[in-house]
Image (cartoon, rainbow, N blue to C red; front, side, top):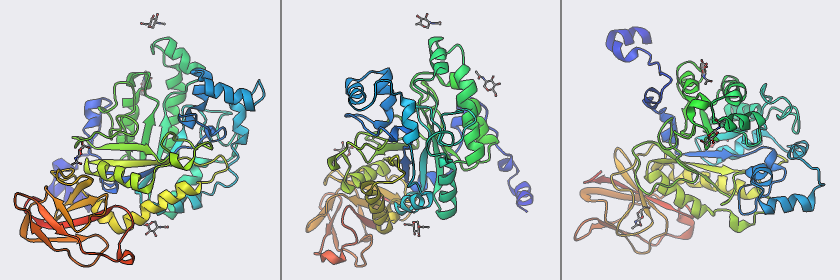
Length: 454
Ligand SMILES: *[C@@H]1O[C@H](CO)[C@@H](O)[C@H](O)[C@H]1NC(C)=O
Ligand SMILES: *[C@@H]1O[C@H](CO)[C@@H](O)[C@H](O)[C@H]1NC(C)=O
Ligand SMILES: *[C@@H]1O[C@H](CO)[C@@H](O)[C@H](O)[C@H]1NC(C)=O
Ligand SMILES: *[C@@H]1O[C@H](CO)[C@@H](O)[C@H](O)[C@H]1NC(C)=O
């Protein structure tokens, strides 16, 4: 039926596009709509680094690299003080016990955040794979540590228990892999490591777990030609089992960031400060310093819900998605402070999702008269995201009211009175609202309908 209509009405549109293994062609692929609409994703960093689980003013998942490659004194001292002299990084793996890892429970907690997708580390730069990979014989989650297919369990739970999209993070390079270091010493004129390790692993996770996001990383040293990235992405877009829904990022080689691939990440915790011409993502952490869990973090190290919502509002106003990271413990728990932040985001989105999900950036991103106001829009309304509760009057310069403009607060029934400002803009009268009638406790969204300048 579809084919008939297709041939009859729109023959030229219905010819399946095939992407070529070059950036021009790959960059022309439209972004699958679910990604921009969802706005929020949850990033999860888990691996053997969850065993030492410390970072000294730095991220815990880089433990091995800081200790053995970069020889950072605080890491060397930590090992000298607490471990026997011949202890190797690989010795940590047997203590990656995961006895409390319950993928169904994770799925419930992750879904409670109101996010649209998750991105889970299949392999970080330590090389350990969270699935029984044919490319990591005795350095994978089935062989040593959990003795489980961690990726498979989470993928299954996310797919069967939630509507979240399941995405995988995969790190191209491995700091201490001799094959990688040999190719590096050869100035990337050989590709022993990428050919025998990285590329097969990428095809393997896509065929096996059908991720809707392939979030590449570890691109800091070698060019995309060394990784053969365009060949893989062309397969991903043309022939893979997720060719229609899959989303990628821009970390496919030294020549890609903020330029080639799918969604732009540019850097970690990226905040461009202005509207972007291309879909981008702010990949950030709830623990200010680390992606992996840190046992030595105190509560001041965690972003508050107010800080998270301020970052989220700014990100969405500038056209980005936020990818908010948590790090589970080696036992497989999501500690209560991470769980609380996830549930708070969900509580907030339950009230305010209308002004976030499915929105587009407006012509103005923030207000010039009152600070801490971020804008989004839909076809029939502008949404003003307000970080601090306004007393008496909320004065905004950007919205130009018409005679039929209405103003409401998401989650609250009564409409608000407003007047036109003498020069330009709108004054919204804020009535006293009883504490128990407030729709939420942090960060409110005003909906402005029928403006002159929607
Ligand atoms: C997932 O979260 C949404 C929104 O918070 C909620 O409506 C839904 O019931 C949740 N689903 C499950 C299976 O927990
Ligand atoms: C790699 O490049 C460096 C710097 O250009 C050079 O010194 C070195 O000899 C090169 N090594 C090989 C194996 O080509
Ligand atoms: C890249 O992949 C293609 C297709 O599999 C293959 O023919 C080519 O040899 C690969 N190149 C490198 C440098 O690995
Ligand atoms: C609007 O946002 C920009 C970029 O983040 C910032 O520099 C500026 O101070 C903001 N303006 C106000 C009034 O908050």
